[in-house]
Amino acid sequence: MSKIHVIDRMHQRRGVAGLALDQGEAAMREKGDAAMVVSWVEGKGSPGPFYLARGYQLTGSSSRARRW
Image (tube, rainbow, N blue to C red; front, side, top):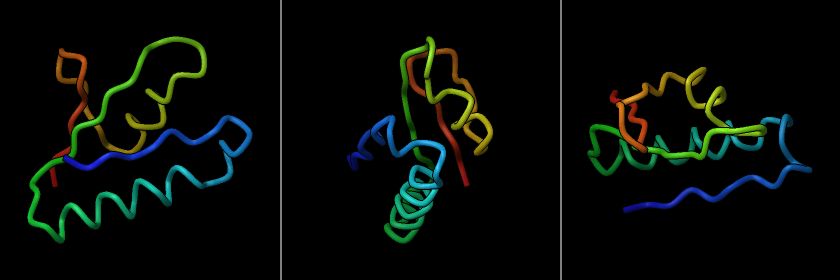
């Protein structure tokens, strides 16, 4: 299991998370993984809208998945 770390609030909205996610997804594809699962806590400042905009889908559980 790979981990992607949280982007500090002072660095958000600058493209850092998008670049990190792109690199993480590329590395997982290279390894042959078919999907990536992320999770987050709902509430103010939640990254949920970011992941949904990137193509991740709600699964009905605490994890959200994107298949490629």
